[in-house]
Image 1 (tube, rainbow, N blue to C red):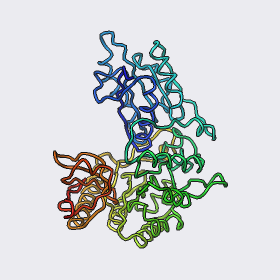
Image 2 (cartoon, rainbow, N blue to C red; image 1 turned 90 degrees about the vertical axis):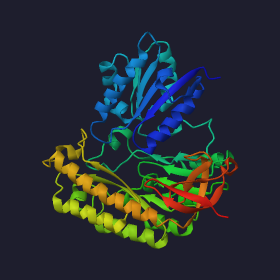
Image 3 (cartoon, one colour; image 1 turned 45 degrees about the vertical axis):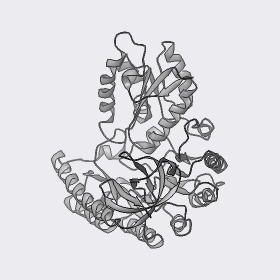
Image 4 (cartoon, rainbow, N blue to C red; image 1 turned 60 degrees about the vertical axis):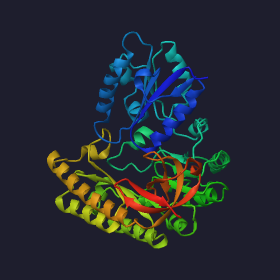
Length: 439
């Protein structure tokens, strides 16, 4: 029975989205049901990300705004989780007397006890790291709400230590889950009616490489594809240096594998890639893109780019634009570089003005909008298989994802939810497609 309400704001990556789902699942046993209204919530939790600069300040500002809901003697719990919680720890409690809980990235299993303590008026911070296999045994599962598409974490942490990135410091070192546990979870999800799984990790391509007794990620993909009931498989995120030919071959002969891949380049300049510590060159990145497009001609690629990295000259930026012309991303997540404390890049000479960085970002985004529009327009008249997941944008519509990862809305019936339906694309928008059922 639910007698309390939980409001969660999730910042950043899909790892945080997955963690938020686990938080909701864990707290149902304590009587909490999710709500979209912070004013009515008995508990507010910010699940934070600190990958980009200013994250801590944004969290402090948001918490200050949320403080209003705790006035007039209301016994509301306010909590912070995720990467900013891991980074700031006790400092958050010290600075914010109205904050009740701070829970780090390795401590989700402690949340129910911490919430019970907060309900008694206790304030706690838990941010200890567990950088061994023990943390996988403490892995909180997701139960309750049944959905057609679900995340399945295959590994946690990162060993790459790219010079700009704080992830290894707030998420820990790479640890791969046991393949038997992953496959058991996928089978259970299939039994519950899940049709699509998204294999998740900071660098899924390096799955199993440290253990010596687990399959490679490509082998794991093939085993997941053998499970009855699972009809589509996605994965994220891929580090280009670990994108093996074995994994690329999966796009040739594993039909259940989606025709979309997220492959962050970060820059098109070899000089900048070296400063970033990315471990690959422009040529090797483009070679992998070429191989992917050869074995799966309809594949679409999304990526990440950092603009204005220390040492990025105008010629380096031009090389990034030319890389975009060669790859032609369907979507690109682009950001102005911001120094993260404790990373190697924070010590580099960053003499490019903020105005110049923003000007470069604007040029890059203009180019990407053109690419997205051109690619999307080319889908008009094509037929796509859509996993119908729910009601559409407007009355009388249903909506789902196509194999390329694009949202497709079309006139349909609620009885189609949960099915794969062939839809003819009639119109393209920046972030979605409009279609009609085949006669």
